[in-house]
Image (cartoon, rainbow, N blue to C red):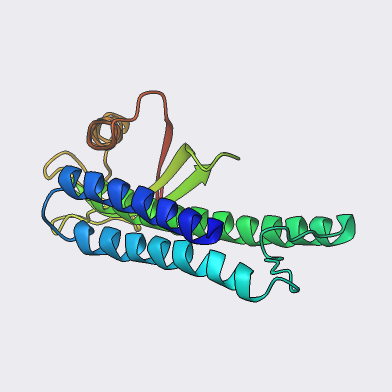
Length: 194
């Protein structure tokens, strides 16, 4: 009789809590899952005392809850976890680095007079961007070309002056810093052929 009274008490408590949850939850996709979980609790509340009464000589143990590993197994599990974590970090950093280099190169080519940009990004140990190295190839003028050197600004001579290169470099830094919000990032710009 005590078993039956305990079972009824547990079921009533679960039903009261279920009713309270029904009132609190809005109509939607969550309600069916809550009803399902409550149904499982009711089944457990009914079956647990019944199984204990029917099988008094057997002791039901759930070893999964008390799963224990030796210190050697624990060390091995931690080492494997650390290796997997390191692989994830390295592959993620490589992907981020590659995408950042491509984006910065594309943005830098928007500056007038720039034909091609190769970007090399350097990340620190935490995976943050540390430095950008840009190698810039300037557009060639159709009017003059002399010994592989490039004339970007028409009518100003065969080779872009140091001032012209400085202007392009400042524009590139400004565009990259403004677009990405970099504050104190080191951006090195080198021009191909000089």
